[in-house]
Image 1 (cartoon, one colour):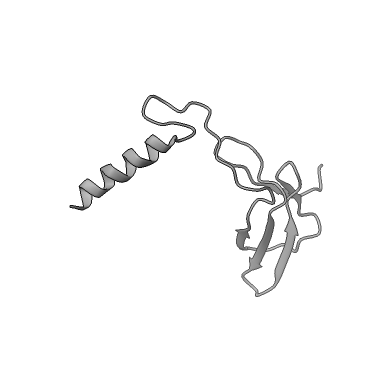
Image 2 (cartoon, rainbow, N blue to C red):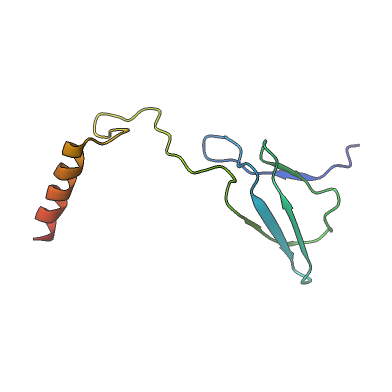
Length: 95
C-alpha cells in the first residue's frame, strides 16, 4: 500500500503550475503551507489529516501569453495598425 499523499495543480492545457505557494486552512483552525514543485506536485505526507480549504498562489514563472492557433480573427502580435483600428472601433461604440 502506498502511504504518500499529494496534490497536483495544472492549467487547462495540463501544463503544471510551478513553484506556487498553497495554504490549507483546516476546519479546526490549523494551517499547512508548502510550495508546488516544477511538476505542479506537492507531497502532503506530513500535512495534518482533516477537511479544509486549499488556496493556491501564483505560478513562480513570469506570465506570458501562449497562442498556438491565433485563428482568422485574432493575431498573436498586434501591429500599430491593429491598435489604431481597435481604438477607433471602440471610440465609435462609445459615441
